[in-house]
Image 1 (cartoon, rainbow, N blue to C red):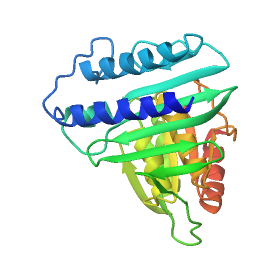
Image 2: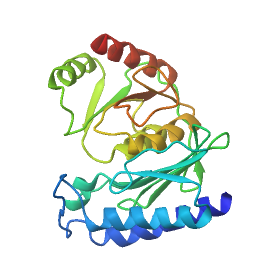
Image 3: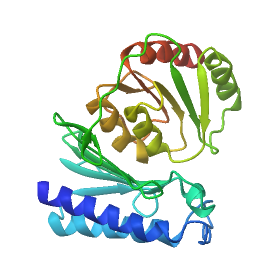
Length: 254
């Protein structure tokens, strides 16, 4: 499996360096959905080919052409470009996210931000890393920085507005860029807590392991550490900040 992990990482980095030259110069080709490029499709197909070549019994779940989740011992979850709108507009912080789930648990993930040349990796039980350097989330006792990542596709404006109002007690940030990178920035220490209201869960499988292996807490709305494709609300942070955020989310969704 280590050989495939290395191949996936190499492919993601190579693809990232290529698409970074096209950022801001590429068209949105989405018809049934908004924010889709030929690079989203090409990257997803390339990663799927690597997985199929390694073992055709592994299943593949991804955003563009492989959105049927088929349970198996080994499942690969791919968000070929997390933050496609950002990529199309030529802005920083879009990325590729890939996760390997074995027996229902994510055991490997990679997220690459080509705009910053930052490679985030995580291996279950072995840690999370940024360009090979170990990541460790620190406990913040006072004035945590909290990111509220609200998808532009989120439908329940009432709940999102209530969430925003509750979060104003913190040093609050908003972000519509790469969802996968939001987790990475938490693990890196830019933020101390994170709430995501999402349109899907493709980037969250990869992000979950990076947070957990960096020493943070990650769950879905129900407090479960191992998420499902149908999940749309996610909470993460250091132990103290996570606890406060989870109480707020529970209040809104109760």
